[in-house]
Length: 391
Image: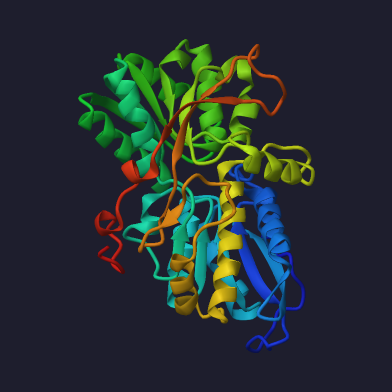
């Protein structure tokens, strides 16, 4: 059953003294719940608290729903949030296929969407909304940050193991393009359903291909299973991951994950600001290390509320203008700014998982290898395919 954390849905338009509601449309119980889940709800609520708890003279209420990674269910729950509970904005997490369906509905209803957990490029590309924004890197940036470096180091022949849905297919396509642009080649690909426990068949195909690099175009438990089982097949040293969350690294353990490189938009130990926020966050979520999605949920919600206060209304079009004009001030992302298509550009960090000997605590997972300026990595709005902007 989907979880709706609110009582007494409204049947009439919200009164001036009714709560100002923000909906979180997330995977609260499935394969991506560790990447976002209840901690995404916490991050959203922390942003509300840090903002002051009220806006436009109304108390702010956060309502969370569990879409279970089903697009039809996510759309139905979004309708409840907008039509019955009068949510002014929706924070999106979990599978990109669900988030894109919800964003399409919200666009029709002129409701703001804050993508904090969908990594498909369509959120700020062909599937963009004039009232939407994407706060996490897309498959394009994730692939480009890793693939080019590996090809230059000698990993020229690639084979992809791909989760067969919009995110995985997008990541594989972007990585393939990056590999070829750097002078490499793609020798094969095998696709698997979301939530595949047994990766032996894909791994055997990859092993037989003779590839130098096995590119993992998947995420969450699928990624963890592929890496763990890849070690048993003797191919883990050939694997390249492009989207890894801190909870995935914890699940793998440093013995297995050590040496893996990938890019992130946020890591808790980057600076004093990220460390201070993480300390507060971990004190309230069972001491679990935040992911870059959790940081995006906090940043996007805080910035949205600042824009609502400046605009003096929750009208999505009016808020969007304030949204794009205001600087992003929370300091969890490096050098962030928003493009005309709602894409938030930030510097990315190429990190490497530490060895057990290098790690000083359970949360001490990565060392930063390189910081990549966002303006050199992210697609300009004019080339994004978003029909609502040409610049």
